[in-house]
Structures are given as structure tokens and as C-alpha cells.
Length: 199
Image (tube, rainbow, N blue to C red; front, side, top):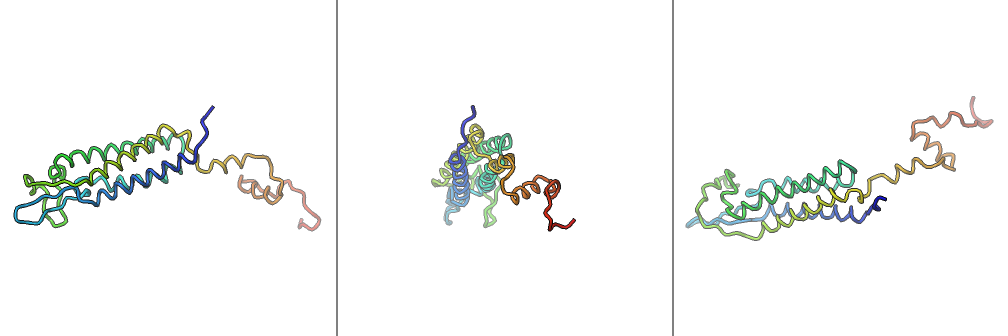
């Protein structure tokens, strides 16, 4: 016997994906570290520079909301696997940025045109912004695992209407005509004609 489907579970998954998207997007816009060149103002290194994949994964999480609602079965499980894998990608990007922000930026260039590699060896102060990205990755991972493992409990979009089409003939003749049209049948064939009808 299959478990009953839970609209609340699907709603929780969608809310978690939206929350993860907001956290990742926000983390990409925040300053993760500041490098202090001697005699100059500190240079801010934002999440979008240290972990460029954050913005794309935030968009993926948002798209996952629509995907979790619109698909079911194997495609929905594949979506769950993809979301969980994206969370791992975030974790892989965040850890090096915590250890050595300048090295994590690689050959990136700041908006001012300065290469991040030129800041190597200078004093670095870190912020708590990467924790927001880590939290977003955890929420995204949890949502992906729920979609992957609990897919049979998630409601299927449009299932109510699909089952309604298989019910018995409608009592209302007008409704029966619309049902015939929906199923590709001519509603005028085989129906009695009145005296006032044209031949």
C-alpha cells in the first residue's frame, strides 16, 4: 500500500528551495574577505568573485520550485539528485574560500580591474558571509534528498483532473458534450435530434 500524498511536504520542499535560493544569492552579493594592501583602502572580495557558481545555483534552486511541482516520477527523482549535487558544488566552492580567499579566486579580476592574484601574501580579514552560503547549501541538500527519497509522497500536478476524465458519463448533456470534445469525439454523432434541428 502506497503512502498518502502530502501537499504540505511539497509546500515545504518549495519553501526550502526558495529559501536556499535567497541565501545563495545573498551570499554571492556579500563581502567574504577583505585584503589590506599597505597604505591603501581594504579591497573587498565578494562571494560572486570567490565562488562564481553561487548565482547560477541560486537560479537552479528557484527553477527547482517549478520543477518539483510540474514533474513527477523518475524526472522528479532526477531533479532531486541534481539539487543535491548542486549543494555539494556549493560546499566545494565555499571551503577553499574559507581557507585562502585570494587563492580561491584564482585568476579572477575585481570590478576595479585589479587581478586578485596581485593581492597574494597580504593580510586578509574574513567575514561570516560564507556561513550564509553554507546554510543555503544545507537547505538545498535537504530539499534535494527529500525530493529524491520521498517522491511517492509528493502530490502530482494535475492528477486530480486526469482521474476525473475517467469517471462515468456526466449527467449534464452540455457537460457530456464538452467531455466528448476533450476526448476528440464529435458530440453530435449518435445523439437524438429534435424536430427543430436542421437535417
